Length: 147
Image (cartoon, rainbow, N blue to C red):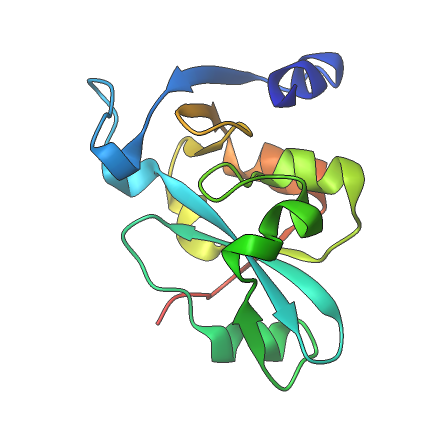
């Protein structure tokens, strides 16, 4: 689905089979390129999306400030699918943007990479895409999000 959306929009990307949770990473890919899409809820704005390197910790304080909230907290796993449309491990900015107008923030470290990798909407499926192309398509901004 995510790949079809990107193909229709003529956005260059590559589909990959990755399950970083289980350590299944293709040759030539480094964990620095893999980003996780986190869904949080703000005390003022409701849902907000933060995208950070898989090995990093999202700073809830920084995300709250950027999104106009006093505080943000992770959406409980049991509420995730009804909020974003995806299960834990499959959240992706492309699919979320198609269904919802939640604010999306990408950690600025992605700008240092030629390509970043995010989930494609199913556990084990990912897409490799230029960070700027992704940000433009999902109307995201690059910010300092990590602790």
